[in-house]
Image (cartoon, rainbow, N blue to C red):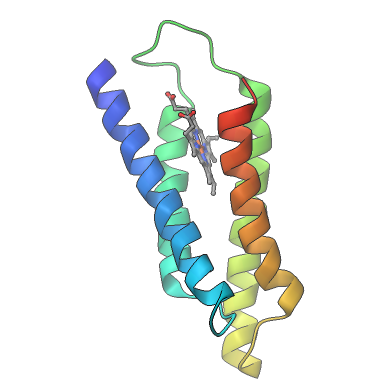
Length: 116
Ligand code: HEM
């Protein structure tokens, strides 16, 4: 069980890497939202929700932190959804929406690592 949990953590981190990596590429490039960002977010979300249940560990989970992370993730999802639709319609995504995707993704990683 413990090893399986570690594998799910690895999948969760891979989702984060895809989302944040795709965003960094665009931050120094065209500043567009991409399908890779949405895929990374979905991978991080599914693995994160699996990790939010207390299996394979012998310490309590910080549910306040997990609740905050879930709200931040939903905000990223909304930004990517609305941003993708806007981009399809107008050809570009509002800069505030683009930057917020990266800032909120970084915030969730910071919450995961710094809030114990
Ligand atoms: C874009 C959104 C997210 C990002 C960038 C993110 C990032 C991270 C990172 C970097 C870690 C590793 C931290 C460490 O092991 O010290 C982590 C762990 C974790 N995340 Fe997330 N996360 C996200 C969303 C979520 C969501 C929505 C949930 C569940 C509600 C969640 C639940 C967890 C749990 C339970 C762990 C600890 C795994 C363990 O050590 O057993 N994450 N997350």
